[in-house]
Image (cartoon, rainbow, N blue to C red; front, side, top):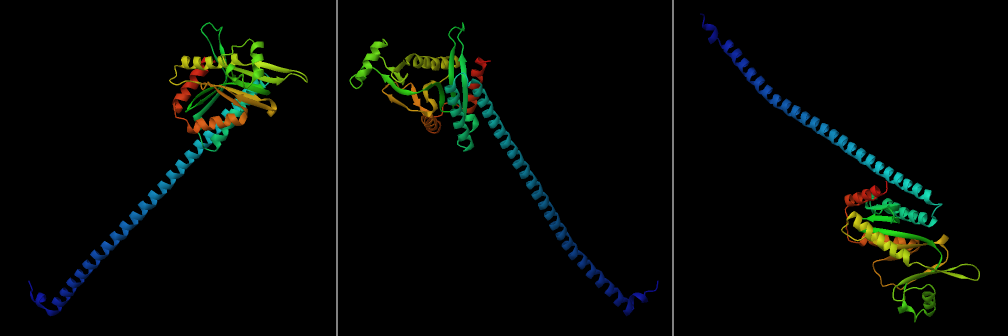
Length: 302
């Protein structure tokens, strides 16, 4: 083999040049391969970031849509429930205007509180014309209104009236109200027991006097019976609500020492009472328990 070619200066120079070129190319390739990898890695990161952002935005839109649909469904439920209650009350209007107006006042109060987002619809349930049957159905009790709230249950007997009420008077008040004693004697009332008298104008020359104690006693008994039937932990609060005829002239004087019965007159007093006890009373029931109580009462009234 001819070895002179490998010792030829020109060959050696060319070979060296080729080696240098190969090294330069290798260095250039390795350097730019790292650049390409960095660019590719950056691209992949940007791609992932964009995909994550897109998916996050879509998820947020989905959740907002579900929330909006849920809000609309709840509003629809509340509106239809209110309308149903109003229509139900309207059916009774011709039978008892006072009960209808009381029911409407309660529904309007609840609707206002829900719209103002002070309570949820499930925090206040209103039932009207509820019956508590007895075993032999001879002593069935009718309840005008039941208001179920988390701070308690309220049983309301509603009366449509005009005139002046003396509530809780007894012989202890005869010195202050000497004319009342004669009505006690005329109506044969127990002077030692608190009585409720309603004075109203019968005609241009006469005044009528109505005795209201039987209704009060029945309201208390109904509240006690409801608690026993449903086996409730807390007492049901009995209430007497006097709804003035067409907002006309009326007055009430309360002499009673009986704290177990609430006596209210007029829509403003009714609203003030529930606003006070809904927001400042101690919770007695959960929303779930209120729903169960409502269901149990409706079961008694198929």
